[in-house]
Amino acid sequence: MAGRRSDTRERIQQIALELFVEQGYEKTSLREIAERLDVTKAALYYHFRTKEDIVASLLDDLAESLDEVLEWGKAQEDHVGARRELIRRLAELVEGKFGPIMRFMQENQPALKTTFHERNPLVSRMKDVFQLLVADEQDPAAQLRARLSLVALVFGNSPQFRDENGGVPPEVALEVALDLVSPRGHRPGAAT
Image (cartoon, rainbow, N blue to C red; front, side, top):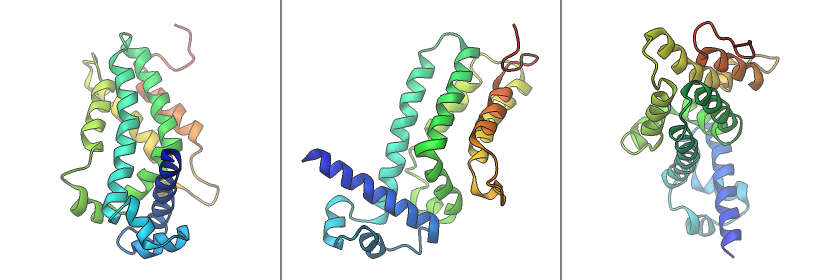
């Protein structure tokens, strides 16, 4: 029974996210979400009372995924190797669960800013990610490159940077991110 409830919750999140990206957060109603799901509004209310509750659940789920990556990263002692693996793990999130949510966040910034400014669980996690990426790095240029590695992953998945050919393939975004996070003079795959 709990499995079915969880599946329904995830399906609601997925459909709502699709609609939010297609037509915008503010232009999407709970009625439209229920119709796309082919359920009554009452059935939708059983899981989520408002659109804000749906978005909050998406952000919370993503924050949980980031917590797992952060927990792994904080347990590592080899910061250079850990930064590269951290980027790989973040790339998996961006290509999977994180990508559609990032697109939604980018395309609906005004609505999110007013509705979730105070309670966005991703803000502190992203600060922690940036901190892990620059751990033990004293060179300001290297710190900036490490931070830009995350930007490369996110922009590589952004619809604003896509063209008629589909834009940046995920493996290219990952390659650029890994290059940026590598210590100066040490390119990924180069002999040490």
